[in-house]
Image (tube, rainbow over all chains, first blue to last red; front, side):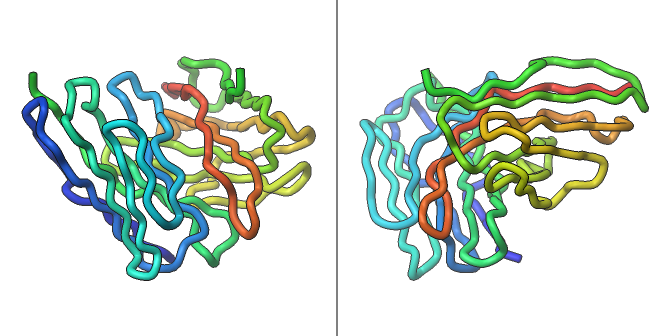
Length: 110
Length: 115
């Protein structure tokens, strides 16, 4: 089945720094989403981005479907950005299963 | 307010005592799904449903049952819970879009402990 790999696994930033998180997937997808899981366990939608580029405030994302990767950019990080960032894909084949990456754990220091 | 709700939010039970976790969405979504999240294993899909009376297995369906009798509800049933089903469970829903789905919206999670 499809493999979804996220990097880096862990990231520590000073408040105000920028970062790039990466999601690689091994097969074509119909759907790709980025989520933020906050320290209270809530899963928050960031982007639905099977292809192209989107921006929402300090966050932006780019998916290059032909090269099978997606990037999440966080600019001017804040302590509230801490948590785990997941990408999740629905493969082009295999019904409507959703596969999550293992996540990137981000800690932003004040 | 558009949302996915789950009940209960927290549950402690004993081995073998049947339980049901409810999930409901008010967005008229066709697609609903259950996931479990475990340390070191991430989020894994248990079952999903593309519409009423249509369900399919995810990656970890053993020990679980689901039903989709109404579009808005997708309960998760553990007929004989075991300690290895102790986990954080999420329900999600999304609209159908072409050959896939639109963005998934997640419920707040149910933390289950089986003693």
